[in-house]
View 1: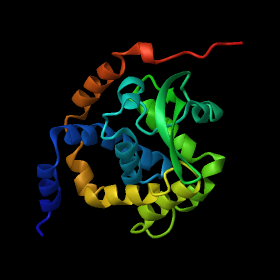
View 2: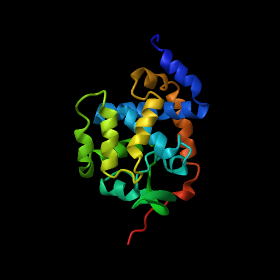
View 3: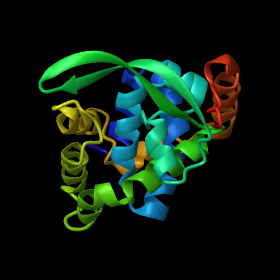
View 4: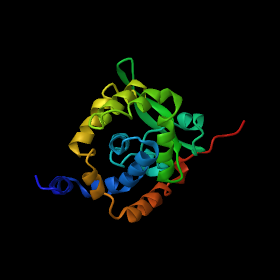
Length: 208
């Protein structure tokens, strides 16, 4: 295989919506990797899975592609003073249930990436931090499993789904990631306009 062939082939298989989403989140994920050592492949895979490629209402209305709960954000002093309430599926004792949850609402997408990194570096996720070291070839798989073991999501197949996304879209290949950084500023501007188009969904907690 010639250099550059895989990203080009991959790009031809993606929808325009998927290309735009990758162009939007990849630079922020790479920046998080440089600053906090969290693999960009993991961050992007989580954003894809949690937001359904940016189609979720939580992403579109609250700039939250990671499903970060409002209580988590507040506990770790994140810049999420507002929240959105949405139905969500949670797996409890092997059974899936629909519950209403409060999710962190961010003013801009960059705040969500900072909040995600700070959440991972908080106490409950110390096993994830331990897996940031070691063999880079197995790092995404180890970090994915640690996220599941620490309870990031209630889905018992969470780690497997993250790894499948990474492998399917070659998110562990720097050349692939570099392919989706073009026109980032333009797409980010459009995303922020969408994110602020429905302020009625965002609530400010009452002060008692």
